[in-house]
Length: 342
Ligand code: MG
Image 1 (cartoon, rainbow, N blue to C red):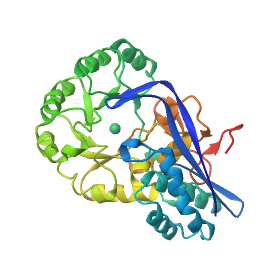
Image 2 (cartoon, helix red, strand yellow):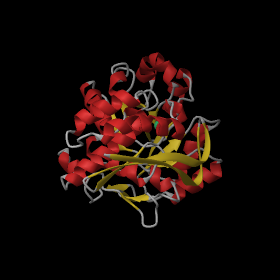
Image 3 (cartoon, rainbow, N blue to C red):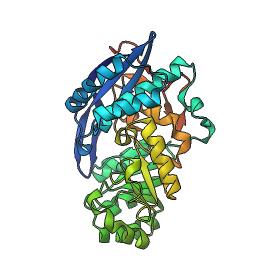
Image 4 (tube, protein in one colour):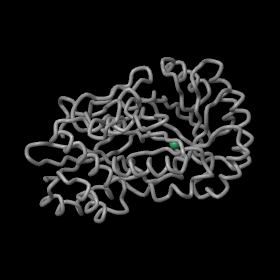
């Protein structure tokens, strides 16, 4: 297989702020794997928080080139094992290669990935729409703009966050979920859970930093709301430490190394009695389409990353008023937009 990789800056519609910081531009890395005249595409969504940058991903991908040059991509599971061995621990690079291989195999056999996996698109949950941290008037304005979405995910963890959710509740009847990105203490999480429950919040995501997982059993038992692990839930290997401390986990392709890693993490979490939310980074419709292909395995979806951008170089899964339309094409079902150099 011939490997090509290139970096690309996704530009955001609004400055995106969470409890760890703000961004206007999100650099990503795309991959193409070509064989038999068929091209599979993947995306890395590097994140410094998980230890990767566009430069480190491009360097990891170079380590995979020799293996790919002589590889037979049809027995792709064995090939992903070989690729993981050379790019580890760079899960973002592995995710890009894994996505491109799944895309290639689906195109090679003329089927969308969800069909190869035996999944029913009718079981796709609705996705939430994310409202980043901002001034109260701007957050209220964003909630009004997102009126068609049945579920809002609100970034919290700043001063006055419960009051902010109260103000949003006055302008929306949508289901509200909150994500503190690890900004709270155990005591804050427990206290805020009670006020948030009174405001009709459904659950809270990552209340404490991932270094404080051990405190989560106490938070979970005292919390008025279910708690989901995002930063604390990375791959299938660390699922065991989450059972009893969380009610569910957030699976993201870039954290766990792509489709295969996500399937493993979902199976492991289900066996441990954890609920599943499939989430995303700020990423293009290529990664969002990949997440949509396995969307029917989730209890909840949070895959609005591409609609927060203004220069998405791929088309694929469409999101209409929170409903996720399974893309129709083979493989991941995404394609470069006309005029995009790929
Ligand atoms: Mg999160």
